[in-house]
Length: 217
Image (cartoon, rainbow, N blue to C red; front, side, top):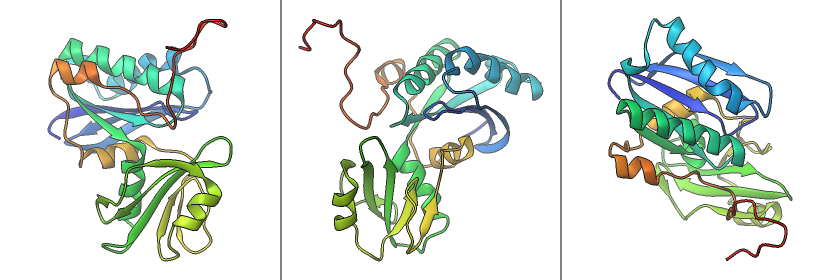
């Protein structure tokens, strides 16, 4: 990750923007008023750039938390990233939530330890995935908490927003610094076609809002 880059985290209640140089964090800002991402994201990004004495065309790449997370926040972030990347020729690093959690666990757990990455959603369901080192054991799944508890081995190292008494890391939210750290292991999207095709990840299948009597095809 060469040169200057920005990282945005819009999948959680806070709106966060960070500045990277050679992939390393050098400064950032967060806005803690929920449901104002659309109004604040561009202003926060401009403020981060101005404080560093940079212009938009000094940026070479952008890092985007791809989710799952807040539907609205993810779409706001993606719209901005696509517009900036296509206008200024940036590369885009799209980082899934479970890759972020695995990176957090990697820095604390033992090498080749079994890692359980999970995020609690509505209805007592957890979106999770088990890893062995840097290799996923199976695709992500959205299961009831009771199903995951029966499925995850006792020796697993837990990471996510679910407290676990036998060991692990509890995260109340995802920071922009954690998104940036995970991005170093993600290949960039660097063509117009790849960037246009980029979509957020959701906990469950997402359908755009329909009119009250309009059937879903």
